[in-house]
Image (cartoon, rainbow, N blue to C red; front, side, top):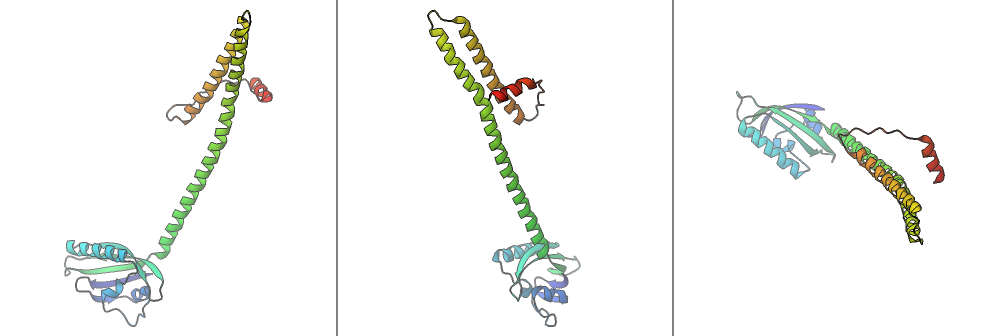
Length: 219
């Protein structure tokens, strides 16, 4: 719905107002308007204050205005309107030619799109949380394995050293396994850090599929 009008915002005199203006506010077009106060009937004090401030600023500067505001129609319905006014330097101060548009449906569509965007963001966040939970569980398993093996090797190392005499060969073998398992845990952590670090290309590595399958079978 689009309405046109010609009025003086200082004297509040309306020179012309289309029938659509009356219908937009819920009035009978045959009755017309005799005051701009009718056009500024607003259900929101904040809207009215903001609109008046913009209009007063435009009048003072002799500039055009573009305002959005809410109204309560005579039937109680709340509508969102946009008013655009053009001030001609040749006209008296406060005299404007303007149009008013009902943008209620447009605003509702924008609000629906925003709600949909928020819903999509919430779903994406939930998916990330779930994915991070699964990743954390997998990482915990990957790190726990070499740590548990290191503890087992450390206990064996202590036993070999406690022998009389100490079994140094087996102790060295146990120490080597501790080093190997510790390096494996460190590699898992380093791989995770590089995955989240920006600006650094992923390092390609060769893998032994038989070894991986063997580890999975042992677990």
